[in-house]
Image (cartoon, rainbow over all chains, first blue to last red; front, side, top):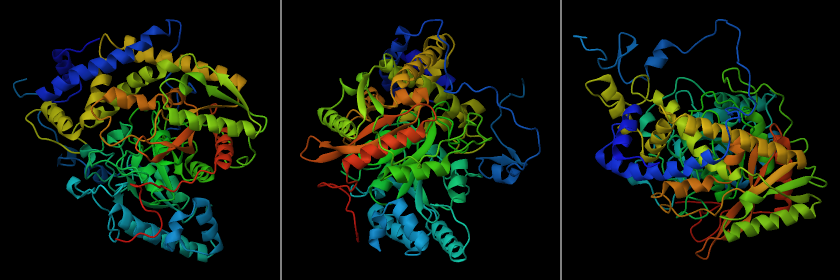
Amino acid sequence: MALPPDEVRHVARLARLALTDDEVAELAPQLSRILAYAEHVGEVAADDVEPTTHPFAPADVTRPDERRPSLSRDDVLAAAPQVEDHRFAVPRIVSQEG
Amino acid sequence: MSDLTNRTAAELADDLASGEVTSREVVDAYLARIAAVDGVDADGDVWPAKPAAALRSDEPHAYLAVTAAAARAHADDVDARRAAGAPLGPLAGVPVAVKDILTTRGVATTCGSRMLEGWLPPYDATVTRQLAAADLVVLGKTNMDEFAMGSSTESSAFGPTRNPWDLDRVPGGSSGGSAAAVAARLAPLAIGTDTGGSIRQPAAFTGLVGAKPTYGTVSRYGLVAFASSLDQAGPFARTVEDAARLHTVIAGHDPRDSTSVDAPLPDLTARLEDGVDGMRLGVIRELAGDGVDAGVGAVLREALERLAGLGAEIVDVSLPHAGYALPAYYLIAPSEASSNLARFDGVRYGNRVDAASAEEMNAATREAGFGAEVKRRIMIGTHALSSGYYDAYYLQASKVRTLIAADFRTAFDDVDALISPTAPSVAFRLGENVDDPLAMYLNDVATVPASLAGIPAISVPAGVADDGAGGRLPVGVQVMAPLLGDDVMYRVARALEAATAFDPTPRGARAVAVGEVTR
């Protein structure tokens, strides 16, 4: 299927990408071509075929619930773009008037 | 000592064990060659990626960072323990290069992306730990397509890697830096990762052996995720034996990776020299005909004749759904990528572009941090997973995956291993495919079927073909084996290698000089 520019902008919003207008204009025909090619998967595999996500189809994996050393807080926070009071800092998510 | 960089890992291991050379001498020889050939002055410790303006068209640009001080210290430590008679692993003291997708504690890990420029991971990947535990000496981190998305290493945010056989051509991708490092004698061994062919195709383009292990047999812990159901780390080497030996170091069950398979791994080297006499080898009809360049097809036919000459029975095999593997791959991999790369939100690590709201900060950060190919794949994947499309795209592609795995099982009921070209052409020129994403994706046509089925697959150099401009470039042949049949894969690969006598030394008008190099 063709992806019109408005649909590209919608997907970009879902993907949290602030695409420029030039990028939208370039991506629309590219994504349409790639998806048209990918849609060949619809020609085979009827409803009775089970999907595969792992070649060994493993059962749920569990481990003993025991204490183990983890990364130190300081090591982890050292990689963060912004830290306040030993926590990750982000711009306001909920407005005060709420 | 310059000839040290021409020895195989197995030869170096023997020379180290016998005391003919020290690990420090080997490491110093490699660091000197890296300085001369890759233009990285290797006296300090960790380098940031070179600025684009400093890249030269006569350098392969295999490395993003060289960890010279740490490598020398590790080599000295191995030498001291060897001198003291301490037990050491079979590859102890042998250098290795590591794709910049595996985390290295305190050493920059960029994944070829501006998003992670400057990030110092707080932990080591399991593969990194396994290399250290086996006392392989890490020389540095190698260039790659951004987040492993690409088939040419041109999508690296830090500039492309060039093919040591012809510096105007790509080394393949996404593990192009690792391939170029081993081909240019900037490391005897390297670790790459393969999602849809990212070890095998660069190995084919650079005249190397490169293997993708059975999915789940090498830990993904600390491997920055692209497509989690497909990603596997594996070895690059100049010989099959070296590849099998490095593979042995990194294989094994890891409780830290929930997709890790807790199954006994066959000994990968015990039967390496057993040959193919009496084996049945299947040529995959759908991957060996249309779309394969004439020169590649000729090398494949010669390889099959050699294998037949060794006593193998060559049979024609059909994988009826092989033509649907690439469309399925280009839904599954981008879908998983769009989910995995959601973690790059400018909050916990990586870079941030400030904005008034959290959502605007997320979107501005990702817009600035990701390159064009990564954005393209995130967009495909987000669309394919979005409401109303999931069934037709991701679910349908996952069903096709079932059909392809069944095709392989049927084929392996009849044959011991399967053969195809690794890539449809020899290495292409820089820039040749960058404006046509779909043309670039078609490079993966012969490698993605094994990826989707999870089976082990290796590329072995089997000859050279005309590059269309008066030169000759390497051609790889792919050997695929059943799940957990990695030992069979290496055995067939070794037989082909021994019958081929391929010289992995880059040669040609625009090849990297091998041997003593000074500048």
